[in-house]
Image 1 (cartoon, one colour):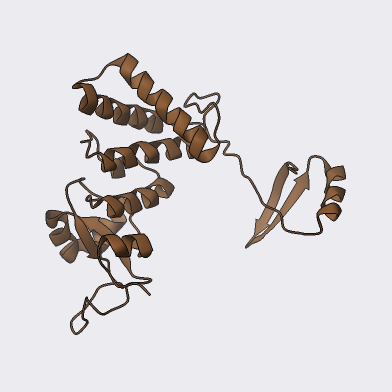
Image 2: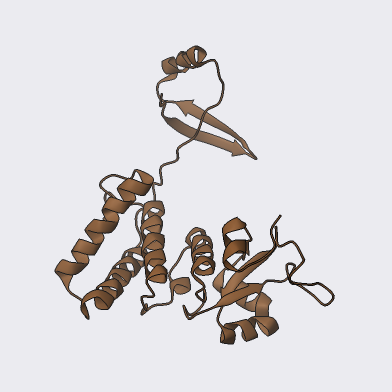
Length: 225
């Protein structure tokens, strides 16, 4: 059962909601549970920056597939990913229009497009970190690690332990537990740069590093227990 309402306030993890149909609240007694879930609708319109970046990625995909930009082909790519949005996230009739679109859904599309490009080694004209919002950057960091692509430039990469998660002198990389350590995917050039300017570059690109999970540990042959 779904009951809609308006969020009135939030204090820590306590929220106050005014229900639009308070009579329905009595239905909860039938379920014998007090567990509820919240679904938030993003009221922010799609930004021109998001829309332009999404289309530029689709143009890059078209270039990789047919050797150039072609409006009809790019519309087919858009149609395919709209169907993927519906299948993966239940977002029917996805739109990037000012009237019907929103920032959160468009960020999902952009991340799906970027992950497709990482998986298929598609070159991008524009650096993602210059065009992504902070929530989307975290997912892109993870996708770069999973595909061994530098989060900065997209070139072939290896993992880098960020400060606080580094494997220092006296630690055996083959024996330590990597659970809880944070990694980032960097090519050789950016790996060397981060060894000297890690704090500055992390702040510049709004990077946080990715906590090692079982999938990442398996890809990089890291101990995880």
